[in-house]
Amino acid sequence: MKIRWLPALLILVVVALTVRLGFWQRDRAHQKEALQAHIVQFEHATPVPVGSQRIELKDIEFRRVRALGQFMPDFAVYLDNRPYNDQAGFYVVMPFKLASGGYVLVNRGWLPRNANDRATIEPFDTPKGDVEIEGIARADASKAFELGQGGSAVHQKIRQNLDVTAFATETGLPLQPFVIQQISDDGDRLVREWPAPTTGVERNYGYMVQWWGMAIAAVAFGLYAARRAAKKEQRVSGV
Image 1 (cartoon, rainbow, N blue to C red):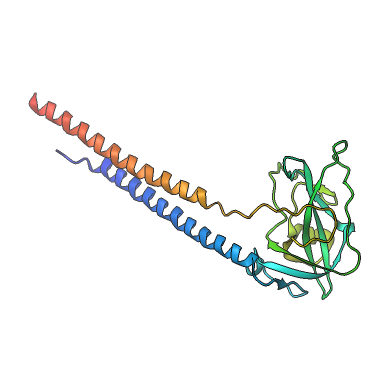
Image 2 (image 1 turned 45 degrees about the vertical axis):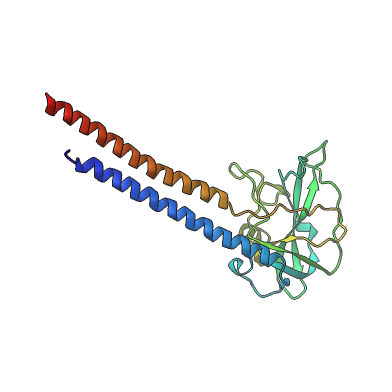
């Protein structure tokens, strides 16, 4: 049987590429599993104090933090389309003026939406004076799907998403490059049953299986094509 080198080479390339991509997805899954283990460890560790000195996101994300200062309700932002137990509502995000200097954004918790007027904010309490809070450092205050700017226009209280850097520019506040997801209770009537952070490791394992399945399919197709070609050659030789 003659080997047709070009089809065979193409199949080998496809197999090599899909196998490699499968291993890459497996490695990504292992990295995310390690990150998930760190997240669990960080959440139960001693809180890291947040002060005037800038802390880079990569050095603080997912860690438990503690901060002393005052909330700034005049700069409050309400992130829309954040459901809780199938009820529509907002996340209340507010700058926090640190007692030692500097500022940090705090996602204080969830607030139900007014059933009669979506633009009306239900009442909640904000502690006055210095208060100590604890929370988890996150890259943002949660993100929701957004078309264009959506509700993120400058100076608008109700928004879809909030970018820390853009909000720092908008307000002129030298914010830390992360958001504190508050877990401590200060009697403000906000809900703080936060969804557990997920790394999406299941998707990586799913992609791994898909890529390796494609490699097996390419091999099977190559063998099938070779078998048909061999039979055809036999028929031609018999003639």
